[in-house]
Length: 217
Image 1 (cartoon, rainbow, N blue to C red):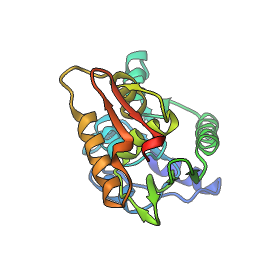
Image 2: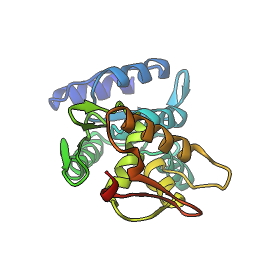
Image 3: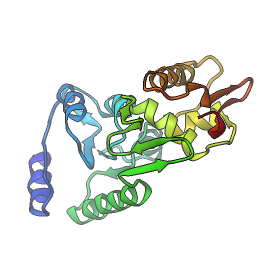
């Protein structure tokens, strides 16, 4: 069985490994524990890996490498568009898998320090926790809310279009009637206000998108 073979190989490499075969147990698990990486097959016994990946991306920023016998270009593009960090077509060697895992982990470690202070905004950003802290209080953001806010933080003072925010934070194209970004921003504002932070720092730019203004933080 491939899953058991991969588990044994990764354990031998020194990784702590948690093996799950069913989609219904994965969501609950990742919301309760921290993982550095998820290696996931698209074809699950009780569900579709792409649908599961989409749900994971709503909750967590944990890196995901998809495995699949569906190695056509269209399948790979679909996997990346759903938020995959890498795509491993079957059959593959253990050596190739090791190289891809190491590359993803290096990239994540380089891109995201454990905590980043934004002194001008009076916020502490915890990338492992996927949350922000103000005055020693955590906002309790969802995974998607955190990604939206992080993109705004990374481009503080810049007016960002909805199309850009959808692509960078939500990993999908924007459509005129899609209001999900607006709902995420509304929830972010509400949660920031609940911890005593000025929610008006995220301004709506009519007809364009949003801007995070340090002067209003």
